[in-house]
Image (cartoon, rainbow, N blue to C red; front, side):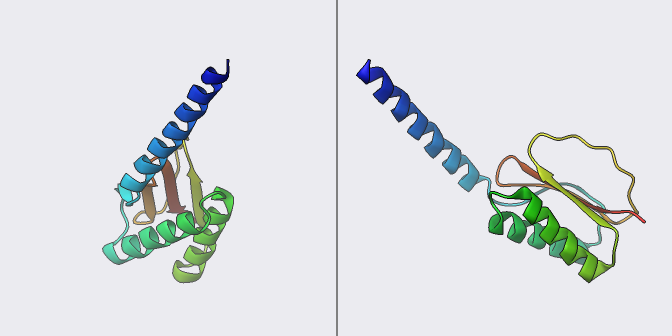
Length: 114
């Protein structure tokens, strides 16, 4: 019985290592869809990466940081969703949408509506 536990613990440690390696490999931002102008897209993408790295275990705080920064920089009415495995259908202002992936399976959607 003791060897089964050791094997299970080894498998758990190995799977955590593989997950960490996967996240390290996919730590770059991957834009899925955007209609933002180049400068706004770059700033928003950098802001999303910074927030996701700073609040790696708290998506709500990361979303709040992105929303507040976008409101200050580009005016009010910005919305942010961060998570894994969600779907959405939104209405947004033209040239004010960014949908990206970061860290493997983390998705970030930032949009503005009036």
